[in-house]
Image (cartoon, rainbow, N blue to C red):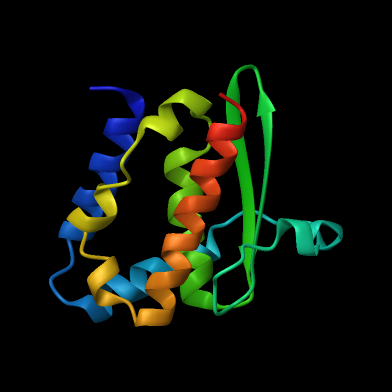
Length: 137
């Protein structure tokens, strides 16, 4: 099992600890609280993810052949969702990310338990991360 597969499996196991979606939302909110600081000067339009109802900024750098992401959002659940994605994909090679199917999001039931606008935002976040990877392959 690759490190990426192990990270995704850990997320699936963490979500399995909760039976109710209300508890899973609380967990997502907690993830957002643990997201690192994002500099105000990087909250620019070019870092803003298009397609999200709330504002989500994503920045990345390629270092030693790996992509390192940082992000922020002005909405607590959205901040938790981008935190989840950053924790899984930061520190992975562009090739690994570009080839991934992000299916762990289906396995935890995230898409079907979000409002249509938040699900669209999730899709935009995934596409932005994949594009960053594809641009650096």
